[in-house]
Amino acid sequence: MKASELSLMIFAAGFGTRMGELTDNTPKPMLPLSGQPMINHAVDLAHEAGIGTIVANTHFQSEKIEPHLERLGVAYCREEPDILDTGGGLRAARQRLASPTFTMNPDAAWLGANPLIELSDAWQDHMQALLLLIPSDRARGREGPGDFKIKGGRLLRGGPLVYSGAQIIRTEALEKFPAKAFSLNDYWDRLCAAGSLYGATYSGHWCDIGTPQGLTLAEQMLELGRV
Image: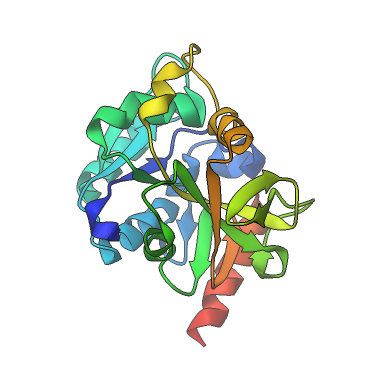
């Protein structure tokens, strides 16, 4: 499947609490990374892949990020009064998206091939979700154990591979969850049990931008990549 045939959901509603005072007055996706807001890097990857429909969810400091999304040509789905988490947020926006669709966290830096194109190249029609994973030796800004291991192309919980925050996922089954707010981790657990959760390994380098230290590491990784 070509990346240009899909849409993209960017998760931009979170509070960014691990960023400390950096997010007191700025939503996390708007923090600067290599001279532009963090979310711009995700949008640039989507444009490079030829993706026409991009939607972001908003909640925390929505009044500060929504005008910027409009300038980028990105539609937004505001979650109010309460934040819906990743599963609830994707379900709330699914009528604006294709299925399957890409989803991406904006708080990551990528060095190498376009991750959305790598995902679309690995996608097969029988899959319900395909997660892009990073070997620990190519993941920066991430502490602790990995998230998954791949066995026969399918994913199992636990193992050395780190979830990158990018995936292709079918959204129809999200309607079966009774809670209004829920995590996509709950959906992945169901897919794991059914043998329907798949993974692909990213060929480049990646940095998690969950903390101020992660932001510094991401800046350093991208700067080294330009040398």
